[in-house]
Length: 91
Image 1 (cartoon, rainbow, N blue to C red):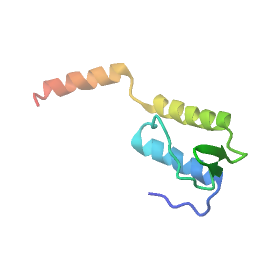
Image 2 (cartoon, rainbow, N blue to C red; image 1 turned 45 degrees about the horizontal axis):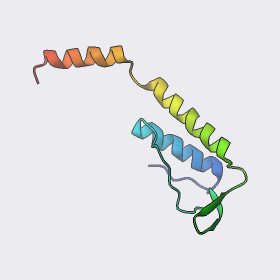
Image 3 (cartoon, rainbow, N blue to C red; image 1 turned 90 degrees about the horizontal axis):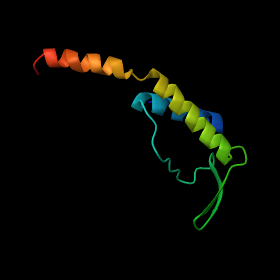
Image 4 (spheres, one colour; image 1 turned 90 degrees about the vertical axis):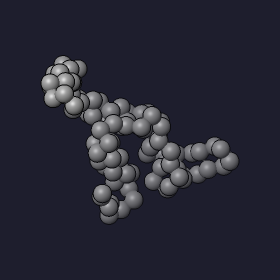
């Protein structure tokens, strides 16, 4: 568990990165509770995001994180070898 010292966008993204790393994956959807780091204004169901966090940036950040996590996942060959090893243990 980490506690940031501020509520900046950079801290938010660093916390997301650490969370994704600890879960070894990323969620399909992120839902924010109107925190000012992400949401600048809300009228009904219309959400206006902070200027420095436009949709392309959000998508690019999440894609970068996903690719980083995927790069660290074991290969299919590694998983097959591990499965074969487990079978030899007769569990």
